[in-house]
Image (cartoon, rainbow, N blue to C red; front, side, top):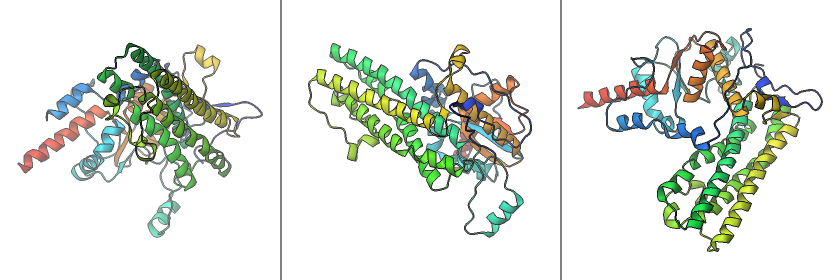
Length: 398
């Protein structure tokens, strides 16, 4: 087994920084020093909207020049594994085009999304079974461990609670002034897609765990404990819908009709309540607090379960300026690096979050990980070469 949750003795709670690394190598990667997470929510989620200059150049039809230290964009390697950064929403919308570029133009045999790459090669026995059995089920753990992915989504939702409190304060102020600005309203609710995705990720993770499509590194007992959290996640989703609906209810309908998320349509369709503004503010405060409580209850349930996984920063970590969100993100980056290094001669492209690419580069500069054997490519470099390919195809047709 390559990844295992350590259950501590007696009442001691486990910090995710102490979870073992999912590697086959004998070298031990030491705990890294992390930088504190930014306090401003908008700065945390700024990458959601990408580089404005790059997008401008892309939309104008010109191949964007990457803003990297290298003068020449780094190409994909055809003789080894390429680990390539992406902004997930951008790549999700053009996945087929990326696959066409990688598989057909570059001639590489494999393309993996972030969640698809495995932690190790198949053994000879597994390879034979995969080739001969119609019912073969790949039980190799994923390179990005279940516990870290699940934990980071919980912490992302917790950050969202803080942002919603900030948003509510700004809405109250505008409501008193009886002036809502369209641009400001759009900014308040711009992260909604990310919010919904993080909450849904938790439910999907448990669905995949239950259907034996994920969490292969977990024991049967550990899987049962995770599946016992399903009711908490359902309450988080419902309380978020309620909180968002109460915030929308305060704002003039003409400013929000085009930004209400899909999850609030149909069964959860938003309808203005017609309450006086004072009652709407009070209702919104209650519902945001209920959302906050539902998230805290999930964290408490995870900590008090036999898993004993704490998602709170310890006092020692606070004094050292270490934040649990950064810690988990870096742990994920380390696991990705180790899996890629173990299988560096697999030919293909593995797309991961662009922040993880930057984390791997920083870890290497600080000599906290071993040599990078695979080809590490930034999002900007990949986008440049993809756009160049698309332009060449367009000109050849013309």
